[in-house]
Image (cartoon, rainbow, N blue to C red; front, side):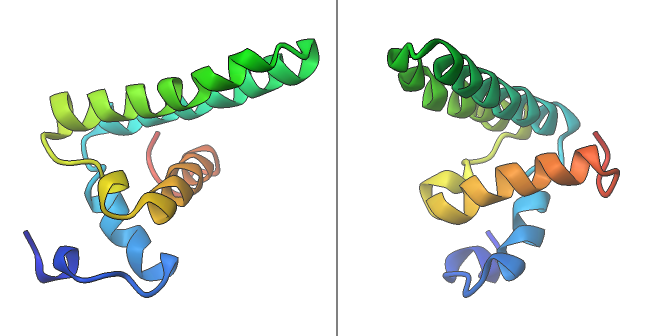
Length: 105
């Protein structure tokens, strides 16, 4: 564990490089993308059909895929446990960065 992981990050800009390091395995990253896109799909479906119970599936889809990526492929502990808000932000920024070509898909 690095010194940086034992300290609280003071900003998302400081956290994001650490977040990317914790997602260096391409399969883990792709599972995050699948989970995030599924969350958006579930949200769109719930809004379109007004079947609000589907919203309960959003955390299962998002975290389920991400945590399989961490525990099975990355072999690390998800940042969500220590940095829940920054980690959630990181999921969406990483997806945006993948779609814009800033990081490899």
